[in-house]
Amino acid sequence: MKFCPILFLSLLSSTVGAVTMQHVCTSQYVAANLPANGTILGISIDLSSVTAGRIDAIDGNSRLSACDVNFAYTHDGFDRTNVNYWLPSPANFLNRYVSTGGEGWNITENNSSLPTGIEYGAVAGTTDGGFGGFDVSSYEVWLNGNGSINWDTVYMFGYQAIDELSQIGKFLTKSFYNVSDSTKVWSYYDGCSEGGREGWSQVQIGSDLDGAVIGAPGMHFSFQQIQHLWSQFVEYQLDYYPPYCELEKIVNLTTEGCDALDGRVDGVASRTDLCMLHFNLNSTIGKPYSCSETAEIPNFMPYIPAQNGTVTAQGVAVAREILSGAHDNLGRRIYMSYQPTAQFQDAVTSYDTATGRYGSYFVQQSAQWVEIGLNLLNDDIGLDSFEGVTRDTFRDWIATGYQRYQDSLETTWPDLTTWHKAGGKVLHYHGKSDPQVPTSSSVRYFESVRKTMYPNISYNQSISELNDWYRLFLIPGGAHCGANSLQPNAPWPETTFATLIDWVEKGIQPKTLNGTVSSTGAQEQICGWPLRPFWTNNGTDFNCVYDQRSLDTWKYELNAFKMPIY
Image (cartoon, rainbow, N blue to C red; front, side):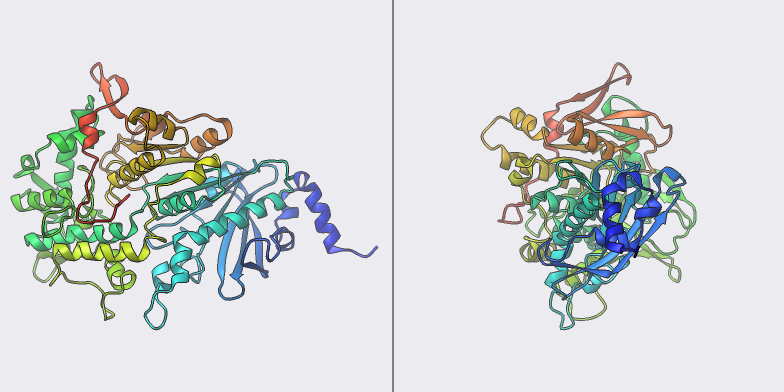
């Protein structure tokens, strides 16, 4: 009998639950189970680009073997977007799909986030956004050759590419595993930082996902990019560029001084809100600091020498002005800043080996935003000086970006009716000591959603209604998307995706979030907003309490703008 490839693929589709990865992890089988052109509006898949190969022993665990699938698609033949999916073996598939996001200006972290999906029996996907490869950042293709904005790049980066990744991924998942129309395939999103912003983009457009884990989201995009420049501007205005070790000493002393405010002394400043009310930065002046050569600091800094000295009044003035946040020339607030105990990553200074002096160091990503995103510089050098820049300039930079990208990148739309009506759940978390995205930005958005969705009921009732489908957790001592080396006794939630799965699939609402202490492996509970952590009985009994005075510290009036900032 003559062999018929189409018949063979058909037989595989009807028996995939019984076959092995070896049978299904082929480019032919994958191609046969992709959506036909026209199935997803405007998308045509290049079947000749499909590759499939088995991956074994992910993270050293053979149970996590997966099929690594890559292919490209176009929008009516005019562009090219690459996607990558990892599919668990048929025996380990648990009727789940998850999309993942990126960081910075990158829409993907390549395949580094895909193993988590495989661990939970989910197909996991990532996309290059159509930017030319998984190692290509959006800023590299932000502008057309004539210097104008490439709006296809903006919209793909803003929300479209992740939505298409999910649509294709869900179709492939059902077809690859021959899931019947009557069987539910649960679909999710999981991402942090820029990936967190991308997650909110899907919730806000009403994507038909069932749930999303969203960490430290870089929403308020135009604000966030300029925020990274504020610390350097403060140093410029005050004409003092502190050694990084001096700023780190201020952070450590702040943590030490605020440790007991949560009712327990453990090296963790759980109550940064009370810290804002009670800690005096001047108490750090004169305290000695010492760091070894090339001390570990953020943002890929150049050589840093050994540092010894005492905390100066100038250094404290810089720290205080950074923590107070950006204001315009009239003293009106432009944006929120980081919480006390957050490392001053944006304030890192450079060291001139010839002069032995410290100077400014521009955060490249945000300097590029002024040049590329706002398209305000007419040279190839980029922003490398604050000469001629005032506080009002910061306000104007943000206003320009806010107006230009409000519908694509700001990602602060507070009316989530479509998502809520469809039954979607959101687990939103943010480290209290995050040095890259202000923790208060997450609080601001949560409160904007609460006021928009439930405007005519009491505060307590609106919190209860919102928490039925959207919960926010502020992580004590947490840094940006991970544990904090300066507070190793702080808990970090390592099972957020599993928690979301239980909420979506089993209806187990996370009243608190489980956290793992990195230094000991101990488990601690993390309070859901607006409740705050507090220990009683000499630090032995944990409570989640309501504290109006501390809650008020999270509220900011961004009165430098006449437009509402959600």
